Image (cartoon, rainbow, N blue to C red; front, side):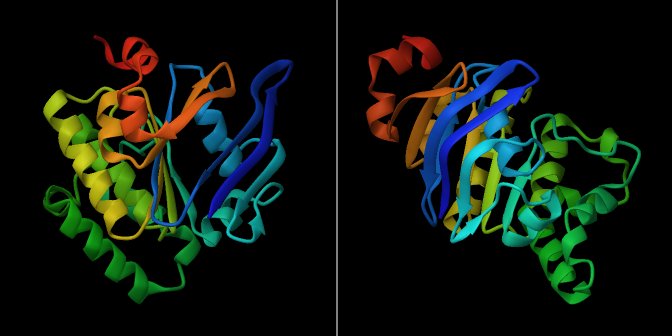
Length: 234
């Protein structure tokens, strides 16, 4: 469904990605592992049309490279960025509705989708009129994921959703991501929390310095001594 082939990306003279090839099939939950700066976010920014890259990114039968970000969202590929990127003074409801900008003419569809988001995150319904910046870190991450879901993704790219969250909230967040995937949305997850990510994913790729250096199914990588030493411990 989502295929990256020989993807390369430069920021000025700095090579952020070199020859990256990976894929996520329909209904899969695939994780990108790697330390900060390994290139995970660059993969997502290229796929979202935020940075120009060379190579190929195909979503179904459609080539995404060269498309505008809004066109990519209309295709059904939506990113939830690292750091949430909320508008802190705007209400939770308005932040959520920003995710539906490409579907602004479909009021009935947007109403149905936001009801689904509030069903998934009941606390957001209680706080829908509160400024997003007044919420806890975990609740803000719910808003960020909910906003992405408002774009009606066929495939969802989640960039470091557990970053800065307490352990109990991290567990709940991964359970939510698993539910989203099980409901039929393909998920590509960039994470440093290797153990939690591998426990819920089908397959994984490991990135270092802008390259894919290892790949396999999640159980294989959980048992790989190199992965345990580098990302899990023990």
